[in-house]
Length: 102
Image (cartoon, rainbow, N blue to C red):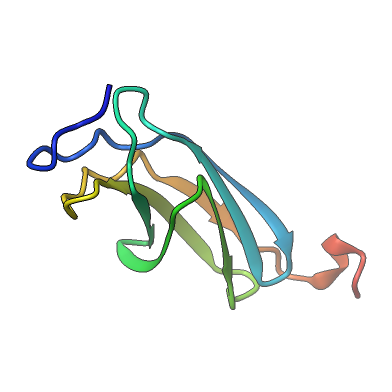
């Protein structure tokens, strides 16, 4: 079942964030079960920072010690955007030593 062009897809669910470097986060989520979105918009602390056609996205250039909240929206083929997902919080480490770098 897919959503019509006039109707936005439901928001993605089960958003997860993984710190993969001192300045990088990998986001993964599940597509809404009742739709087949054409793309996803990625929001960091309320501001759109990118888009993806897959259910993953890597955000880079983050600052050590800062906290971020990520949410994802689904976009259908006509460009209608869903509400944003429930946000997931990420706190970047204060030191590179947590990654075996420093």
